[in-house]
Length: 82
Image 1 (tube, rainbow, N blue to C red):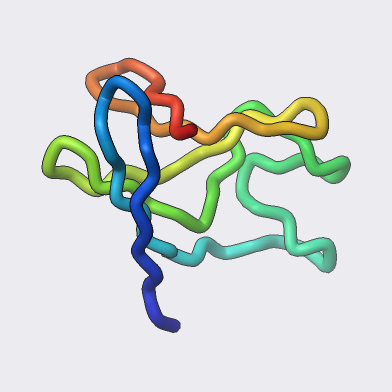
Image 2 (image 1 turned 90 degrees about the horizontal axis):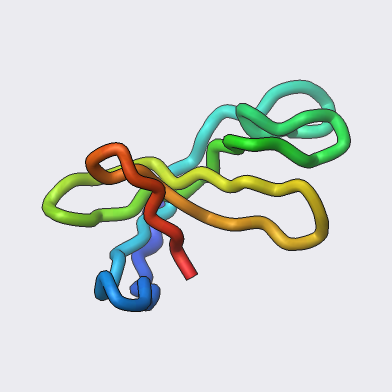
């Protein structure tokens, strides 16, 4: 599978380069790691990585309603991708 790269504005912290990086799903519902059967979770692993501050970091999503928040960690802080 090819990787797909795009740029997103990260607000005051500049741009983040995202690359599609598949993760293994589970069960017949194709749930992502960290995702409950209803589709929600605190730390859902996404099939994307972010290149930030010279390192590649895995993206996660916190989802408890219709809208989720994408984030990754940098020096112990959650960096929100918008």
